[in-house]
Length: 164
Image 1 (tube, helix red, strand yellow):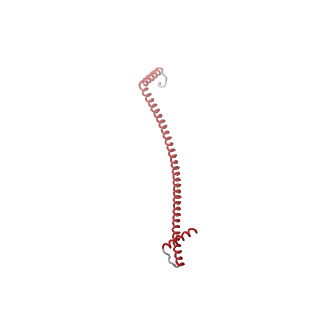
Image 2 (image 1 turned 45 degrees about the horizontal axis):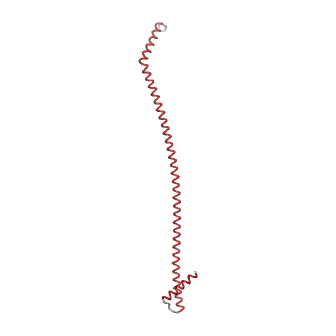
Image 3 (image 1 turned 60 degrees about the horizontal axis):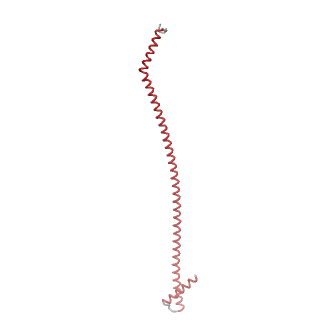
């Protein structure tokens, strides 16, 4: 079995075939294979670049959203604080209005009491004058006419006013 033995002719022809095959592959297949590998390399490189850009954009958007969320929370706290301030001011205004209204009611009540007092005093003076006229009429036994009656009333009222 001569197949396993080394023959110089066979070695030369094997090398010649290998070199021809390499030349043919280099001319025909090597450039398309290298082109495919380079295309694949560029595709992978571009994909990695796009992925990095997408990740950077996502991180940027995340940071923006976090900032917006923080701003919204800050604004919410500001609005709550402002609402509390407005509520406190309204409470104080309502209390002040109630105090003013109570003071007005108190002053009106005092004025009404004073007015009623003056009415009662005037009524009492009139009754006292009537009693004085009647008592005078009975004491002197003479009917008192209107002018005299008015003079007695005025004198009585003047005397009553001096005693108070």
